[in-house]
Length: 257
Ligand SMILES: [Zn+2]
Image 1 (cartoon, rainbow, N blue to C red):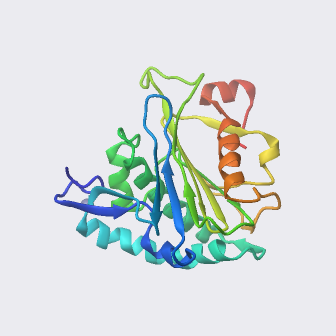
Image 2 (cartoon, rainbow, N blue to C red):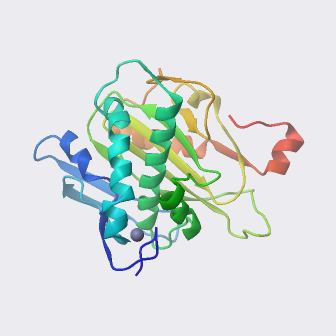
């Protein structure tokens, strides 16, 4: 096994959710970490003390080098949104940093899957250029309940109705995560799509990637009330994503929402 980000070996254990998040856990509190996949894949749900969901697919130089730097440079931006719900404006630079961190974390969650979806060149470009793969969408939301501190699941999605000759079995990968108050939804479609979602979600989630053109007032006015509601909300949001090929979108004059 060689490192998914740089190709070196040996690999060591890397946490899907970084250890600095442990400081927000209530003392001694059990955490449920789960990965949930679509038909034909497998489920992982387990109780743990703290956040120790790991994958053994990253080398020590990546782990202690660029990944550690990315955690350090993201923490100051993420922390206020994790621990408080004060109304604030999230700057464009902060939005980019959150999107980058969320993408890296979702990439790690993808590596927990038996067959990770993201191609290796995208992981390598994350390391070398801190590049968010083309097509990645990241939305932000918030939840008034700070606990559970981290809840996340991943879902592989068939892009029903969207298919190209290059991609006979198109799938996407959806990774919602609730970290304290902060809710982040990352979606990697495996093919080019234009996405619209149902209007009722517009007061609950705001897209921060691809890049917006303005600061974002945060938190949004409508929020899932607790961790369980977040899970249900994340599923409903995923099901409301309407995907169109660029050709279909052009034909119907549809723009991404
Ligand atoms: Zn590496």
